Image (cartoon, one colour):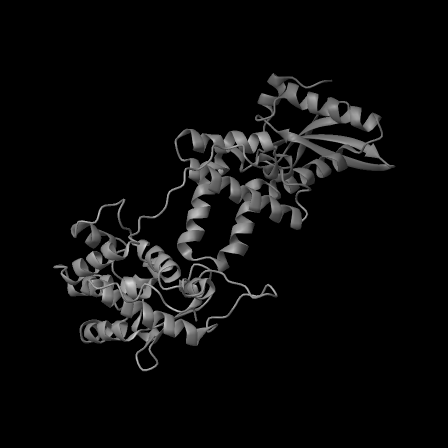
Length: 406
């Protein structure tokens, strides 16, 4: 006779496994420990099989019967309910393994070895904050262009239009990786070109007028802050490396005899080693600094610990204390200053300048030049640049406005 809820609740475990039958092949199995499982017994292909329908009381009598009836319909259609369940689970596991978040993290892990740590962490933070909460669990191949647009519009609507563009670009990179690895067939992000509001151009503040550069250099020489910060300020225009590269400079990377600074790949934005020729003016500053910090790791150690470099705001804060406003000069501004003046005033070849800025420059065959490419010419350029800065600082900039191209 069919089971009842009262009969089930009164059933107690014994010293052996019990089976309380309900009908249609379904029964409640009670273990000696007291666990209760719904089972359904059926035959498929001439073999007796069993299918679990859940545990009691999480799965009640009525729900267990519904599951049994659904399985019987599959069996009547010639489908093995047990195999069908395995296939459904496998498909679900595959969809989970191919979710946007799983694929994105896999892509990020493969790419991050070629990125500096800060760049890698910024990309993951964008995805974690702005994409994963809405699309992370979705199978990557199922996400439409409209869904991507709706998600990144949340970023744009809070006023972060540039971030919206960047995170959408990252989504497109993840989709291209998914296509390469067989998890997607097309990239819907490509359909969204022009869908976001345009980013208003925002150039990093830089002083490029020769007379104003002279004023900046004189202000640096008159800086009343710490000697270490002053040396960093004096070297910044001479070397025009990225602010992070300057503050992480180590004495082990400096060769005063060869007059060069060899920056290892892991410190560079593009993960390529970089060589900075040192003009005599830069050597002189380093020789002044060496007695103070030369026994430690960093040229510009933190005031709190010699095991850490100076703060990433040290140079910027010094510029502000000297009276240079946010819209007037930035830490990156020394790079824009050098790039503009070396090209437009001193007339050095653009590829020499780009090499010295550690930008990607390729030869006619599409290969990236190595760190020593055009090194003799770059040495001459760095020396000429240092001499020109001395001229500007002295207030006399009439004699070097025209130079022959190398």
